[in-house]
Amino acid sequence: MKQVIEQHSLKGMAASPGIIIGRAVVLQKDKLDIKPVPVSSTEVQKEINEFNQAIARVKKDLLNMSAAVSKRLGSDYARIFETQAMIADDPVINAKVVELIEKENLQGAYLYYQQIDEVVKQLSRSSDRYLKERILDINSVCNRLIRVLQGAKKSVVQETKGPTVVIAKYLSPADLLGFSVRKTVGFALELGGVTSHTSLLAKSLNLPAIVGIGSDLNKINTGNRVIMDGYSGKLIVNPRPDMRQRFRDRRKTLANINLQLDKIKDEPALTRDGHRLKVYNNIELPAETGRILKSGAEGIGLFRTEYLYLADNAIPDFDKQYKAYKSVLSKMSGNPVLIRTFDMGGDKFAVDDVQAVDPNPFLGWRAIRFCLDRPQVFKTQLKALLKASVHGNMGIMLPMISNLDELLEVKDIIGQCRVELAGENIKTRDNIPLGIMIEVPSAVMIAEHLAQEVDFFSIGTNDLIQYTLAVDRTNKMLTHLYQSFHPAVLKMIVKSIAAGHKYDIKVGLCGEMASDPYAIIILAGMGIDELSTSYLSTGMVKQIIRNIDIEKARDMAAKACSLKSSSQVEAYLVKEVNANFPEILPIIDFIKGANNG
Ligand code: PEP
Ligand code: MG
Image (cartoon, rainbow, N blue to C red; front, side, top):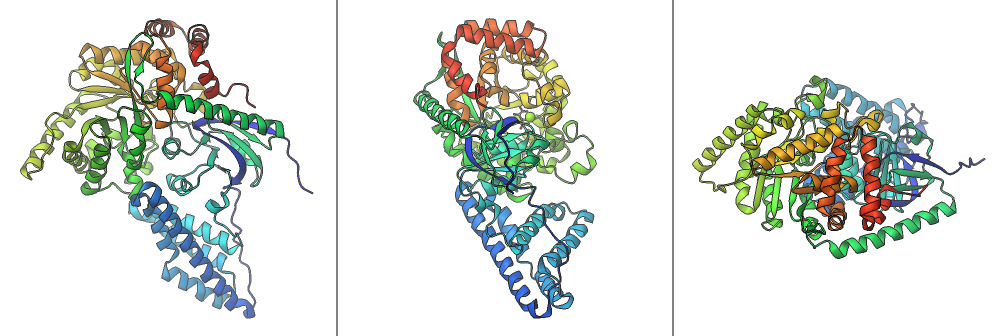
């Protein structure tokens, strides 16, 4: 008898905006059944034919995926799927499986799984990082093949033809890239935080996502009706017709809001009383550049270059980097582009087995620490940046600076790179602004010293919050403690802005906090010069700024900093916005998902 499950609603964190009303496809429940199943001697040839056909199918699916991803994001990002197609085509493994089907009279799925298991075991013992990283790809190919052999008519990506919400524990960047070829697909994940790299990539790819929902997700089955709201973080399972109607209405409201935002997107971010801010965008992939200026942003406030690693699962060489930086700079036609040097480590693309040796990656061998430890990697990046500098208006930004010596050492290395490039007759721009991310409390405390050595600051609140409050930004159990409005965080921001302004340098902010409507108001009041967000938030940020008064925002910022807790600050901001800026309430209500589910 079919089980009827009542409508219920799950809550996670809104990681990437968008509303999907569709069906669930559950990834982790598709457990592979890989027991040895005998094949009678008369069926052996049929089994071999089916195995060969399945291999051909998987290969074809992967090459199709590669073509689709290449069209959308560029050929570099399609390479993951080409590699997987090559794995599926491995002549040695495939021949061995055919031989074993004949010899042992067992089904191909089990024998293939056994072969792959053996390869994976060998690779995990290897000290070669590249080989080890192939394990994920090999397992992914194996899962695909077994699904086909077990009679799945379509690949998981094909199953998502209608509006679909993919339910999974966790997804890798490659999984997201694969799904990016579908139009209406969203993600509801058991794990993760809004600033984890999967969430940031989902935003870049414009795929709605909710993360950190927890184990309640296990109750959902493939085919269940679901509604996901990537604005409020709600996932509604088996919604009744009235609920579906409510969300269809909500989508209409969204369309109206977007229409209004579209009208003002090219207007300046100017408060009602004439205070001007800049709105920039963050990018992860060079392919996103085309939409930045169209979204109304005036520049790129953060290019996370570590995502170049995604294309090859390895640090890109000089030419590839130069090509990527040049393409972004040229497309931005003279508008500012702040390119951040590699922020490897933490939860992003650990290299050289760093995960194995780094017991606490967020406090470990990350970002500038990794780069200074690998001068060749760092110099290759800096030289590619310097060479690309002639193609646009570039600034170089350094992540996770925690002391002055690191900064002075980088300046010295940049000097060496310039001399080496000049020796090769490679032209570079003379005055390339150099800036640092302010993301570690120690950098805030010595911000006045740092400010005298750089041309700009960009406050990275995703990390500044986690390091100030000792709360892992990806840990779902600590979400309630990851507080953007904690007075300690607010005071850190105020101190950083004051230090920057004392030495006449611009101070921007490029963490996710820059797209919170309440935060935007007090950040403006604190004197932030520039906010950098996902392109999806550009219009909203401008709309908020254009409907506030800087004098009032200054009062609110000062008062917020004097309060004693995050909850006090939040309650205060809600009260003040209601009283002073009613024009922005519809947009805030929408984003916060008031009255829905
Ligand atoms: C930040 O820490 O706020 C930031 C923008 O950097 P990332 O999220 O890449 O660590
Ligand atoms: Mg950071």
